[in-house]
Length: 266
Image (tube, rainbow, N blue to C red; front, side, top):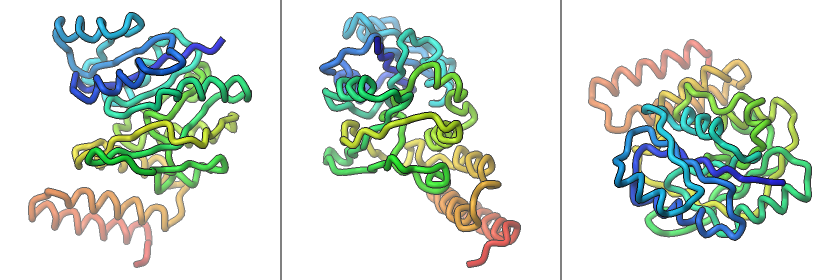
């Protein structure tokens, strides 16, 4: 029997979290349980308010853990045999779990990824459409469409992969899927845009440079010079945002020094 444990990592209670939860409550196939892992303590009143929303809701705290730690902690606490991850600002279509369950019943697969839409300034549009033919090297530079809200994986396999890399606060989704693909485990792409990814401002984790630097360090031995250059350039440009004049000069020197070290031409 397929039992879904929904795992939602969250920094703290916010308005978007309630909208995210509502998209879970409205699922035509109900999850076995819903687990929220907060990085910061919430008040007893806030906890009671959340628990009133659904009898299968469980709340844990991870002592200021990052998104990878929170997901791993939620997976550890999960009682279901499949884990459906969902970020606290994204949304699911009401048939998300139903269609995932249908695909799992039809195919002996261990992981399912769905297509994405994006929400920006209240407007919904097409987003990433990952392919069934995706290879590890396809994730070295760009994310082809795997995020913290469109992954459903068998719990035993999640543990076998080793969960998310706790050192990565960003690029953790790409890293996780690369390690999954390296194991040659069967997966399936559900070609329907059932997840709505909310794009916000530059405070999002996608703008974090530390995670991107650690990801590059982890996989640069497998990357082409072009891959390394694109990653270095992206990190460099992100660091320039809102940096002081002196900092920008330092970043310029560091960037060009790395190009020389890696023997990358222009």
